[in-house]
Image (cartoon, rainbow, N blue to C red; front, side, top):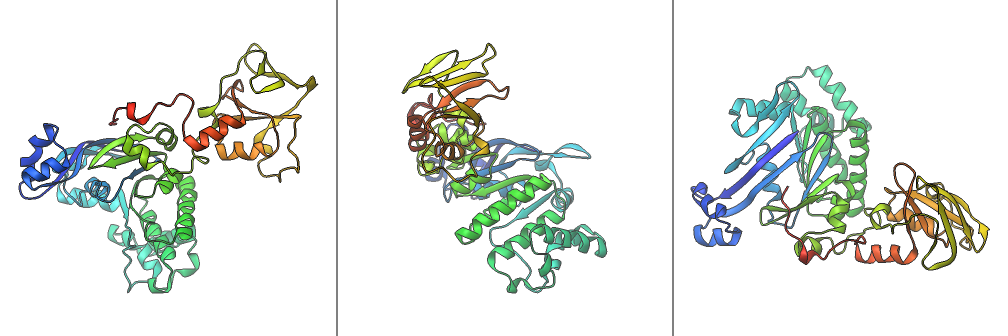
Length: 403
């Protein structure tokens, strides 16, 4: 949907004069010391895929907000190229657009949601939600219909005639989201949209965004400095440092395999239970065998690797899927006659809940129903405490990855 090639932004007079220093490998501090120019974004390349939420995160001053404003050229990049996949025209180079065509791109294909709501205080909630449609020249009846529909979608259908001053901060942010959605733009650019909200309201808005995304499947570039927020909503995450991407990957990839010490420190205090999956930490299992640590447990697989049967201390075990139990209250005493199974995509949070029902390890099945491994209690505890899969290397041994 959007493709960025070596996007660079330098601030200061004649910023292009500092590009040779960047090409020579000089960093942000060295360039500033030698030229008094500020490196905001340093040779960033990425692809924003249709229908995904791509989260860019980093500390204050890392360049994330500068980068998102380069995407729609609210800030002009110093170097590099940007492309947009127009549904009707094919790939269009954003960095080569005339001012008029750039305005058309912003009107019809990209909407932006800001941190501080940016609502018009003199307009009603509905008029705010339909402002982008008015700019597009949509007829009044149609824009009011679409605006009301988007207000209903974000839970503000009864507040259409209210003024922004009558709304809470979270409600005002919902109006900003409704305004962005109403234009039916393919791409939403969201610059720390929930950072000004109280923690509980922020979580509610994250859940609201995920609910809307499941229905509308928009392509979203989302900026945040909140790691838990990034892990909760992102399909992929890019972590920025000194204007550059230092790692790009899924939340689980970044949490389990941080590629630099900087990233490792970033994810150090993250909750892994909703991010790491069973397939990442499972210990391999094959054939007919006894299980280490469980001397009375025998598991038998057929020729295709599927579960044929299991016995514990000579007695046949009941088997079943963990998903059927996670919402049930745990028994007073964990069962020793029940062997639970889950798929590779099951979160550790669900595996933990399964442990409340059985003292035996959990079998992990692949997409073909074959037993790919098991998770016992020590393995589960280690994964939660260390946030590492069995084959993860130390961050100090990894190289920085640029996508």
